[in-house]
Length: 516
Image (cartoon, rainbow, N blue to C red; front, top):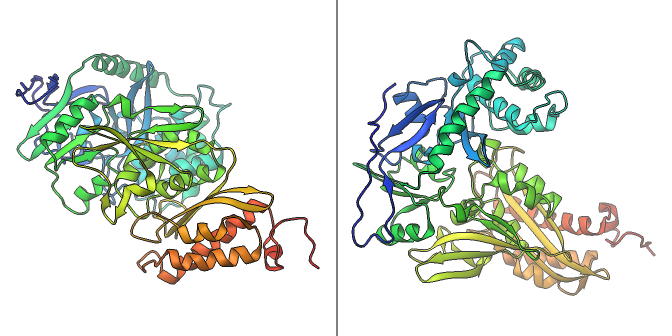
């Protein structure tokens, strides 16, 4: 296997580079159990391209090059709390610099002296025809298997968990029945002893690397990839490179490279900043660091609302959720991002950090216009602060053409305080209805201090017409979006009262009332 020179060099910094930090000019990772060092000539190099072209590990396939089909699925191992945590990821949109200090496991590494238990299960169940998608399925099932407990019989996954773990993998010729059976068969068996030795050997290497304070700084002919290890150093980089692209999970930025063909000359990766990975419950607020992944935040946000739990399960695929970050889903400014409407309805605020210090703004004020956010030069998003309120009823729903792996046509989020059958206050936000996620201020005003009845609902639906003028595109027409927004508002009314639709059209929403 061809590798870059193994000597690590420290980059002497200039007088303006303060504070002084130790840096490395090579990306260092385990490929299976082989330590590899790569001097990045191109900061835009994807892990998939490295695996297939340089490492010649061609079991990892390129299908869509945008993180949808799962043919490129690999395992990323990271040292956490004295053990290696493995998660599935899409190699096609993961940049090579992002795996620094981690382990990369491909389908070739699973077979010791022959096919491993998951590969055998796929063959036993006749779950492969053309075989193009098979390595990706094997890796996703492996990630599922590794997430279970040691007692295989006691920790068998149910169908819903299998489906969730396979939702990011597409097969066009076999059908999913045999693949699901292969997952069941593999998960019912104990992990081979060889895997324990494999993981232990990797842990010793990664734990040693964790003690090295040097930060990645790869300056190549085609640009710079840097991964600062403190916010002070990040601010210095932002001052030196004001046009830099700030990178977190790459589930959006990766597509700029693979689908748009863009060359990003300076990439500043946030994944090595421990202060951005924290989750703090401060009794009355939940503070989520900007680089906390969607998968990591799922349990804490799901505890706030069952609707949030369902929404996050539909956020891309497991491979995407494992690397996509809360901060990235906000900072990219997408009008159809799944999290911002829900967090805006909950009253979330952003903590922004720059050379002048920290400032807080309401999340809805962050989105100025399409592609424009309230982020000053040299600033970055540090965390999201979500109020924990027990006096509101919260609901949110995503409407898209597919249940899994689809972008929202409309996402509606509703937070209301109800007392004695009337709306005391309301925060309503929609995604997909404007150039940015936007609150429905006219609708909120129409609801305030009004009873939960049909007349109030009719006035609030009419107010939505003044709040939004949605566009038509490939996902939905303007008229469809407007109607869906009104229907979701009606669904929120029904959910808050427990009424049936027939009661609404008889003129009542509150259960227990009789019609005169």
